[in-house]
Image (cartoon, rainbow, N blue to C red; front, side, top):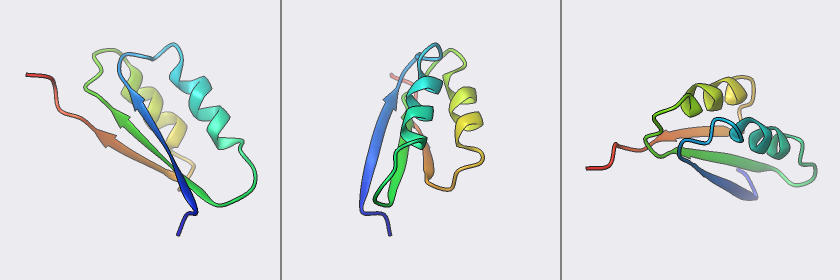
Length: 68
């Protein structure tokens, strides 16, 4: 069980999300998880999140619904 969680909320941040997630992956020390919530992005943010998270079991990707 992770000691703590990083929670990243993402909405149309394809230009920045990979840098953010790569930085979190490099953190050392206590066990942690990374929860990424894609808030109905309309760009390729979700694809980038999946690519970054694919090889790392600490990631948990959640997908938000489109805003009504």
